[in-house]
Every structure is written in C-alpha cells, then in structure tokens.
Length: 107
Image 1: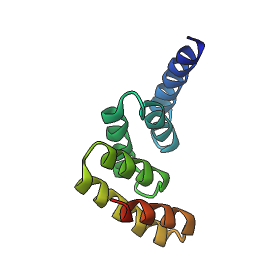
Image 2 (image 1 turned 180 degrees about the vertical axis):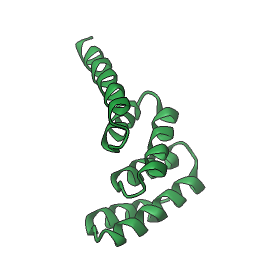
Image 3 (image 1 turned 90 degrees about the vertical axis):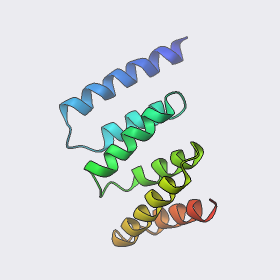
C-alpha cells in the first residue's frame, strides 16, 4: 500500500538524519514515533536513549512514560514521568507539566 511505502521512506530518511546529525534529539524522537505502533519495544528503547543523551528534550518524557505504562513497565514509566515533571518545572513549561502530571496520576 502507498501509506506503508511512505512510512518506510520516512523511516529510512529519519534513520539517515539520526546518523548525520546525532546532536539533534528530534530525529531519533521522530523515528521512535514512527515505530510506536509497530515496533513498540524498539520505540521505547529509542526514546530512553533520547532521554539519556538529551536530558533536556522534554517531549520524549511523555511518550517514553506512556509507552512504558502501555507495555506494563509501570515502575519505569513512573520514574520517567517524574523526571519529565521535574524538567518541565525547571523549563517552566506548564502545559508539559500538566500533561505529564495527569499521565502519572492516572497510573
């Protein structure tokens, strides 16, 4: 199907961008989002790597926390969300703080 082909193209492009610009957290984050419904463990692994290498990249915490919870890794998800909440406070990002807090409260 054309959609599947486009996803494959996008995945290949993102993999290339990750290699070309390892300092940019957006590319691996975007790659993880491409994998989130098909290769869930790999998506989580990439998101955790983004958090480890780019601790200040706030969007990765919500996705990694949510995916951990969905995969039954509640303790890991809780730790990720707590780190994200602290970071959101530090960055003064009220919206991200509220989203992370809400997700944590619903575990």
